[in-house]
Image (cartoon, rainbow, N blue to C red):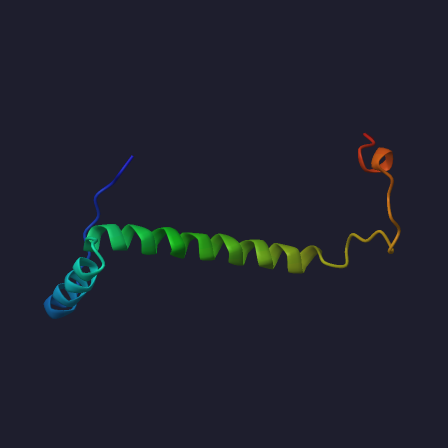
Length: 75
């Protein structure tokens, strides 16, 4: 589902951005959607990195290699 939102920005900045999008064969709206998607992914990646930093060292095999059966064992 697409939802409309409204932003405020300097008029000359908006026109310059529209021209840049046009030069790429795109629209300002499409470019904003792409930016929003990338911005959201960066935040998700940052959360993942923070989580991995928290659990690093808490769970370790001590260098031991597990067998396939051990890895799939249910407890």
